[in-house]
Length: 171
Image (cartoon, rainbow, N blue to C red; front, top):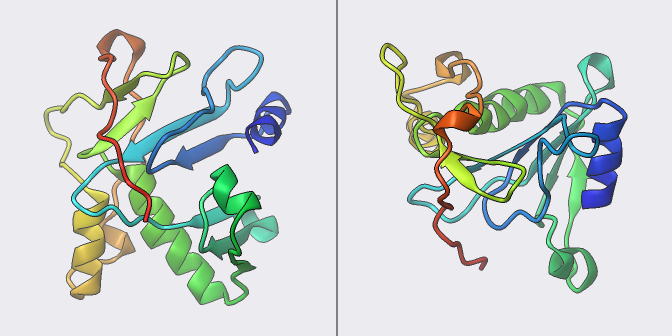
C-alpha cells in the first residue's frame, strides 16, 4: 500500500491520510511523497472511521471498510470493503466524516518526513475544532457539515516538535 501511495504521489496525485495509529509511510519526501499529507487525530475515543475517497468530481468513489490498511487486516483476516453508491450517503460521509477529520485543529498531529509528529500551534482568531466533539454533536442533532471549518494545514517546519501521538490499541 505504501509503494502504491508513493507511486501516486510521484504521478502528482494529492493524497491526504487521516491515520489513527502507527504510520510507516513518510510524507513530504522530495521525489517520493511530496504530495502526501498525514494527520492523526488522537482523542478520547479509540474507534475511528474507515472511509476511503478516490478521485474527484464525477469520478470520485467512496468506500467504507471494516479494516484499516495494516498487514494483519489485509492478509490474515476476513474484512469487508464496499463502495457507497447512494449520492446522499457519499456526500454525507465525505463532508461529515472525512471533512471533520481533515479540519481538526484541536487534537490533530501531523507526520513529517522524518517520522516525527507535531501539533498545530494555536492561532489567535481561529476557532478550535475537534473531529470527535463535532461527531458527537452531529449524533445529538446539534451540528452539521456546515459547521466544519476549512481543513487544517500541517504546521510549518519551524514550529514542529519532535513528539508522537499517544499509542493506540487496535481492538
